Image (cartoon, rainbow, N blue to C red; front, side, top):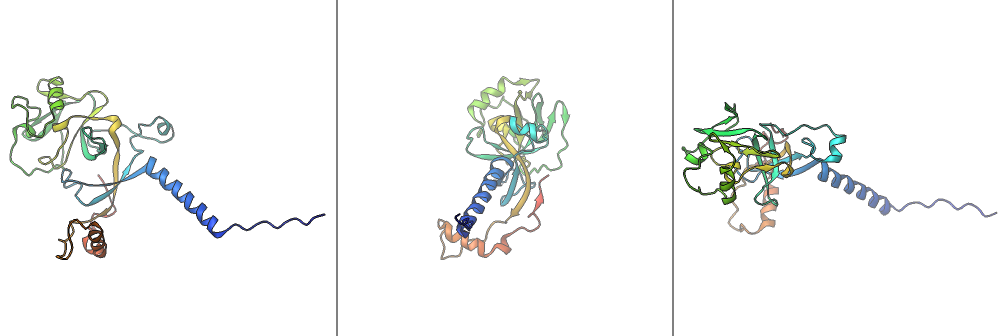
Length: 249
């Protein structure tokens, strides 16, 4: 009778490879289905969200996927929600705005104030900085001709959706605006956000940094590696600690 062979010991490298593979699979799953990192690119949501805020976006909150809708509780998109979405004009770009109108709503602005279905919205988060603009602040106002920044397609579509000087939000779409109301490229200029374009809602500012100090004279703006190393060496100074790990509301 032959003696039973001793079990072979696995290689430390094999164990490490399996561990890394498992971690990678989990990371891909989380990024694909649960959360996504996002950086605020403009001033349009100030002071709610600032340039330099780094967000984790909750991709499950609003559902929208047949498989996940059966497993995870979700709720529909509501007025007042902040959403991250694929910009309808260029879906490769992500925008973040606040939902002002949901399907069926009638939208109108009077002297910068938003009225939905004839009722003025209470918007304590909104910021106003600039003087009155007849198109931006009395929306929808079409007797001014095509305005700068307004897409031609949207200008034509708006005219078909007006009732009593109010814009009707069609089914499956949302009207969004920035909290920095006077400086926001939003639905007033390019139209509605289709439901399928919505990625999720900002959940957490996991890090926030103020504008970095000007580059030292021996560095050039085009040198991204040196810029990165310079910022990392000043990480404590450029971090906005009062915003880091803050829930988005």
